[in-house]
Image 1 (spheres, rainbow, N blue to C red):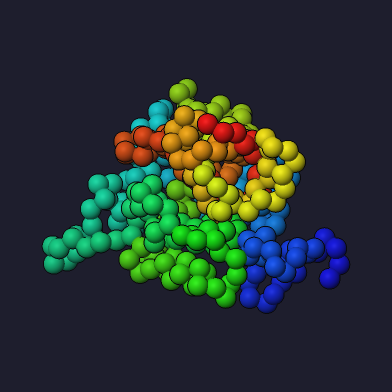
Image 2: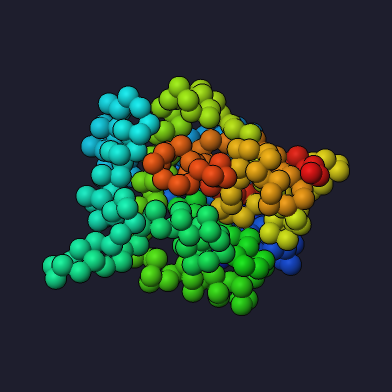
Length: 296
């Protein structure tokens, strides 16, 4: 294999050149993806330095009426209401988390992006977290590094457990990946809208976020230039906080990163009527990040 060439293993995965075969799984392989940047580039430091806007297939054009209506909004709560009415109409997702009423009058559980967000914020290593990580794997091509335990091999118990949970019929139904596609595109629309009280101006390319950790088990250390800096391969989906003090509640080490805005999947301000705001949480697509490392 020539240097710098990414090869395929014939199973929908691409393999990185010049990476030792005993390296963790997420360093050795990527999935094909549905965005306009190859997975191998998307997970690299170079992308984070100079990010490009990402689009998931034809999501925006297939829901053009939604984004036309959003463009007429004058404030974030109105935009959120329009988005949720659209999700209710297309996917039967009720904003109050309740099930959908069937012909017999009984309410039935239907998987929804809201339930996944709620489950993630309770524990990202349960089935809801696996479905979200599986969506990132499918759309952005990045494999997870951790789900309950480090994932180092395809032929491992950790990979099998993750795969079983991400396909759970309780949460992986009702076109859940399409719901998450729209959530991502709505998040990116909100970022570029530039509301007056938004946490970032619409011209920004990055936002500074923080993550508290007790050890680096979940994130592979790619390089350690000095004691205050590390290059980490973050999980394909991970949580950050906009508040350093809150991040400190989750670990003795504080990681601070300048996160490119196209890698933000969800943040508290896009659904202001929901109780997702206590930790100032941001869901961020992973890959290699240069982070500052400090102790509390």
